[in-house]
Length: 169
Image 1: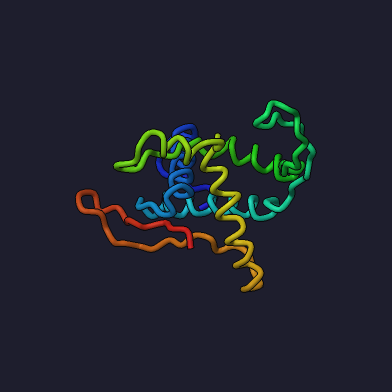
Image 2: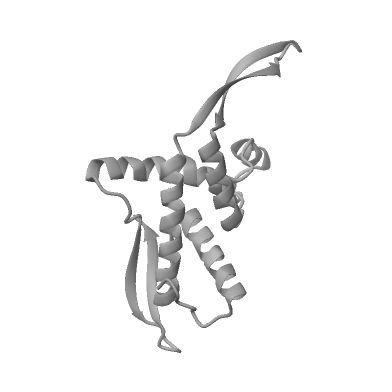
C-alpha cells in the first residue's frame, strides 16, 4: 500500500489523502474504497504516533499579563517544547485546518465562547485528545500502533468498488 497510486496523479492523490486523513482525525471514522482506506489509515497512524511521542514536551514560562485592574501580573504559562512544536508544525503542514462548526440551535455567543482561544482545533484535538488516549493504551497493552481499524463493507452498488470504513480505535 505504500506505493498505491489510487488511480490518480500525485498531486490529486496527495490532496485526496490529506483530506481523508483530516476528516478521519476530525470525525473519528470515514467510509471510502478499500484502497483509499488502507492508504488513509497508514498516514493517520504516522500522524498519531508523532503526536504521542511529543505531546508531553512542555515548558513553563513566566509571562506578564495585564490584570483586570490594568496592572501587570506575572503568570505561569505552559508553552510547547521544541520537540512538540516541531511535531505540531509538521502535522499542521499535512492536515487541513478544519474549523469547529456551530451546533444546531447554538447561539452565536455560546459558539464564540466555546471556540475562544483555539486557532487550530484539529491540531488541539490530536494533541489533547488522541495522543494521551493512545499513549495510555500503549502503556496498558505494552505495544504501540494499531490506532486505526479498516472494516470491509462489500461491493458498492453501481461500479462494484470494494468499500470499507476506516475508524479510530
